[in-house]
Length: 281
Ligand SMILES: Cc1cc2nc3c(=O)[nH]c(=O)nc-3n(C[C@H](O)[C@H](O)[C@H](O)COP(=O)(O)OP(=O)(O)OC[C@H]3O[C@@H](n4cnc5c(N)ncnc54)[C@H](O)[C@@H]3O)c2cc1C
View 1 (cartoon, protein in one colour):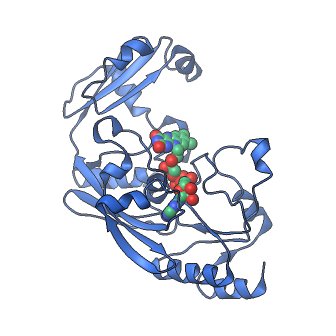
View 2: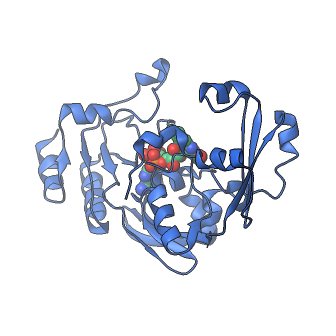
């Protein structure tokens, strides 16, 4: 790594250059296909800013030294978006993870983890409208940068439809964007700016009624009208999880409390794939 670049960044925050650590940042959640992996580069370094000022200073240095920046949350995307294709600085946003609640929304830093937001929202009698099924570990900035759909999207739409405003940083400073201009940042995979924080809409923490219905995929399509969330799993998938033997639709409605026992257990497994990474707080 260029000595002048290293010392400029070191004045701002810790600069990680250990080869073993840099090797990890060549990857996201999935293995890059062999045909594409030859394009992947080991980052020059990884930096973890702790506040807006540090992000701005890092951007200023990157611009001065003409080195690309690759923002990164928890690396669960699996599409290679946070993997460097040039000699780059990886901007790991996970240390910026504060959040605070207002009546109908939460203002969350980019590195806040969705499940932690959801748990805290519940303590305020509120709940996230939408979150990804990778919520145990994925970050606010990462999911918004991908404009994901997830749990709750059947009713509330994509994450963009549930963001009131964003604060973003680029080479000209920090700005707040809302309304029509959100589309320049939500779903842009970090190519247009660094998401610093988001104001995210909440719903009342009303109960969720969960039903598990044995049916084919074709039948399932007709049963999800008006639902908050639905998840169809075929029998092979359920057998693999040792959780059932027949094609099953989980369908959930907001604001009602009853539901079947199997439905409730199915709903409780919605974050099952990354359960090992759950942080208990
Ligand atoms: C088991 C599992 C379940 C999943 N479920 C869902 C789901 O229900 N719905 C869904 O849509 N996706 C899902 N995903 C995909 C992925 O988890 C989500 O898109 C996730 O929210 C990405 O967050 P992350 O923090 O891991 O982001 P990363 O993977 O680190 O980054 C994703 C992209 O965002 C960019 N980025 C990260 N932080 C910022 C920032 N602060 N500013 C600007 N750009 C930034 C990165 O450069 C990259 O392009 C799932 C993945 C797994 C492994």
